[in-house]
Image (tube, rainbow, N blue to C red; front, side, top):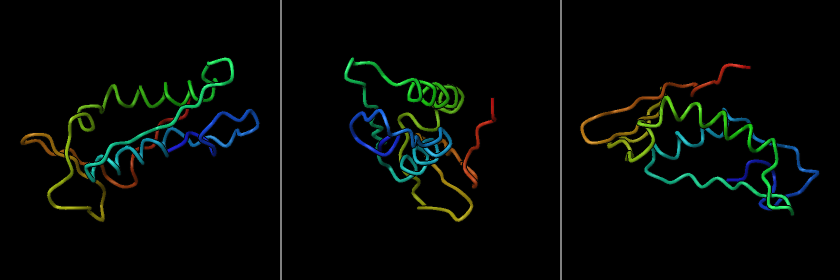
Amino acid sequence: MTMNGTWGYKSYDLNYKSPQTLIRNLIDIASKGGNFLLNVGPTAEGEFPQHSIDILAEMGKWMKVNGEAIYGTKASRWGLFPWGRCTRKDCLLFHFLLPLPILQPK
């Protein structure tokens, strides 16, 4: 998934996805047993755009608190639920209620 609308860096593409959208996609994919591949395109100078850095920092804050429910987990044996998503690790179940997490504004 791209952070904005293109796979490569385009200075005019400022249509970035919100951290909330990317986290929701991460949870949805993890709950199905998948891997979330997030494209972060550097500029021609090899630097990440500040928008990307800010979004990744917000995702990092969320992962610091909730990473155990994502890293090393598998899909729920019971499929998808109408009330949210679920991941599992060993004998633990992690539930994410819909609507999926909303980050607090700064």
